[in-house]
Length: 245
Image (cartoon, rainbow, N blue to C red; front, side, top):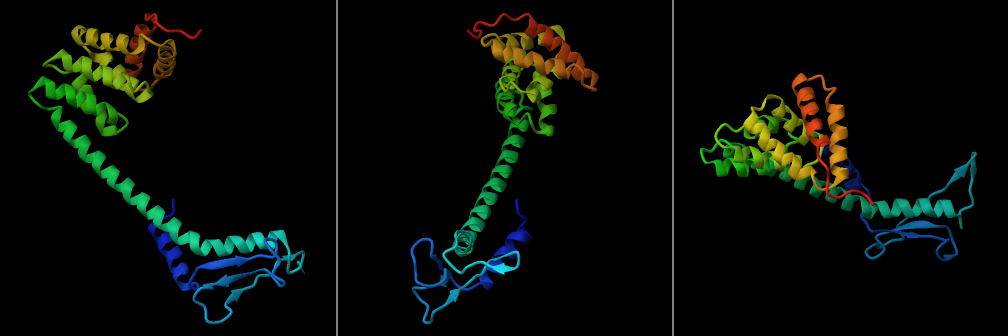
């Protein structure tokens, strides 16, 4: 994506060029009895303002017209006078939206992280559900692990585990594996239940998760590797309800 400095430079070049619109008048689109050209601001021009281009091949000038390549080049140049300002405006509009979305996501993440510290288990469960969508953020793994191993209520563990597992990606499986590696029997049971709920329907989902766990079992982080092996064992014991015909 172009930088702001590059966009500024483009706008300066546009501002310095002749005022548009530029209209291609091409021999290949309808004989004009002369050479193909770009007519500048025909609605307001008081003189015959035109741009003529020549094309050379091996040092020899190509016939003035009609010439398909020359007309295509003229059409491109003429259209760029109108197209470029619109494209730059769209880039700036989309960039503003993305920056705004990023800021809003950060605000939402911070709010959910704080909700996860609530004394009410229902708040913490809601935080687990919401934070699962932010699991790809590095700073989200800590709060999610705390909720997966919630010391106050295993309902929070169950809800958070299911939400994270429903991502069905490496990020979610890694967080759950990290929790499984250190979970006590009570928390392990509820994580196990969440695994069954998420991967007990479609065999393809279960098989994909097992493949990821095999790869994760070779992780250099011993905690992740140990948890991935445990998660793989649980998945291997599942007999999914639906299999490919």
